Length: 430
Ligand code: F0G
Image (cartoon, rainbow, N blue to C red):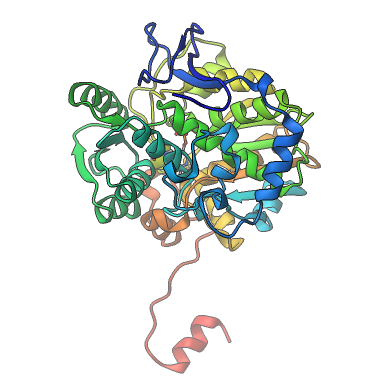
């Protein structure tokens, strides 16, 4: 394949390089792959000018908040790009959630404002474009819900068949609904996400289906655009911290890889620190980082944040590499901390799904622990839309999650009343 700048796949573990003509996700040694390009052949200052010129484009592939940065994503002609003009998501003052976290300068980048309601669209636009580049006819993924919703949508647009492996009964309803609506062949497997992830890799190999989990390095390339767009929205002022949830650990790997590339190109001259936040019941990276122990999967991961209910994340090695580069940290948060932080994000008028709110719960914990300075500039990534998981919202506000050990601390209970003005008065206390 011919790109303007030399581009190849490279093993994270042993450094072996592969030509992109060869379609693969793993190295001979079993390590996972990165997409690398000859950054020395790119003029950083000129690239930044090009990206600024594209800001606010009204139509076409380059109006996408991913493909605006295509020189560092996948440099194909525009007519080969499968896009829903993803990205271009808003960044909010955290308001109530900022006060809750104890931060004065806290912005929330809302990736739940992507076309299918999660950050996955940024990776998926690139992944499906790569699928077309390899002349695939079918694509597949294992998913806790958002990846499958996104893949089904992009596959439909590209005219690809999509096959989805989800853990039975364990994904949020909004996500399952999307997968079915967009026409994904949905296989609910007996087992958890980790079982589904193992199975889909075998299936893709055996049945010659293109794999679109974040083990696919093109997915990671697309997701780098979250960080690029945050910086462009901040006029290239680098925040002190990014705080981001971690499940399969692709997204934080993408964030650090993107920052590293911008740094190498001289587009930024400060390295932001990254805090990865895991749910306490699904925390293999946290355990490893905290205890300085080798990677060990968590056997039966459990959390209300079903998006990140993952015990054996495929990208832990990339994640750790990124954290080392940026002097990052890993934190874990309890179920109660996740849902209380979510109540604050929601009450702030912003709203996000449970996994996303690990960003706020984790920021608060790190401020309380003195790791993040209350004066620091912090960008929290909200990864998914509030509507993805209505059951979690309603369960919390009706205080019906006690069987999971979660109290409705900030519950806003719905009130059943007779249809009379007197009853309304009583309910409103006036
Ligand atoms: N937040 C949300 C809303 C997610 O859906 C996911 C991952 C994450 C955070 C974690 O990102 O895996 O890159 O560390 N969801 C995947 C899925 C696993 O199948 O939708 P990660």
